[in-house]
Length: 316
Ligand SMILES: NC(=O)c1ccc[n+]([C@@H]2O[C@H](COP(=O)([O-])OP(=O)(O)OC[C@H]3O[C@@H](n4cnc5c(N)ncnc54)[C@H](O)[C@@H]3O)[C@@H](O)[C@H]2O)c1
Image (tube, rainbow, N blue to C red; front, top):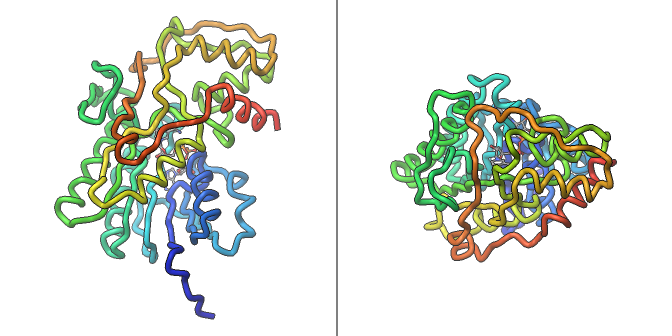
């Protein structure tokens, strides 16, 4: 039977929709009444992240690797497919670069064909080990092109180039979000990302591993805040292409984070120190003035409130 589409409801494709961020975005867009097509090759994504959405008749899942072309009819496309934690993206670095580069070419080609708006989940890693602080969008970055993290960092940088060339050359409507460290329920438990690592270690009564002296800083944004920023970016006027930093501008040392997790979990775990991995950035904090100005967005959830929700998820 032919189903008529409500004009305000869109058909939205989310690549990487079964992953941590993608699954929250699927949920949010379904709640808004849209039709959501989740495309994922389940490399790091998990069925359990989207299982609760499957009964929704407006939700569809397709197993597909975006390194290969895809032909579907959509109005908007969020390109989230890419392993995001160092353990996962360094496991098969060639595939990581392919996902960012070939995957972006395929998704941009699709958006061009069907005249869809497309948003890229880029990353603060495009700034590398930054020499300016905090990082604003005009900073070009300090990235090692041949290191073990390069498959991710340079892949994402090339994806940004492709997005802007499709915009200039083919007038494609693009949006580029540079996402800073985000945490929350549905993070992969053992993927080496610091928040989930600490929580799982604390809940299991194991020592919390801090790399280096623990004085390197990070900013942590709760997932709901980030998703709000991404949806606002997609809905912004066409001349707002980004790149736009999305993240929480408060800065904590890794050691402070470990101490907070121990306190909030009530764990007896101790903190142990290990050698800092190669190419680990020393300092990260977003300058979000552009997001405030163009999207009227800033994160609202405190680290304490966000950690409590995430701890509750991992306890479950
Ligand atoms: N979580 C963060 O803090 C953060 C920060 C910066 C950028 N990002 C970006 O946001 C996006 C989502 O990150 P996440 O934290 O949800 O990671 P994630 O690993 O949980 O999700 C990535 C998803 O992409 C899928 N995927 C990977 N390669 C694919 C391919 N070739 N074809 C189809 N699907 C593929 C995975 O199976 C997974 O479901 C990524 O692009 C990541 O680079 C995330």
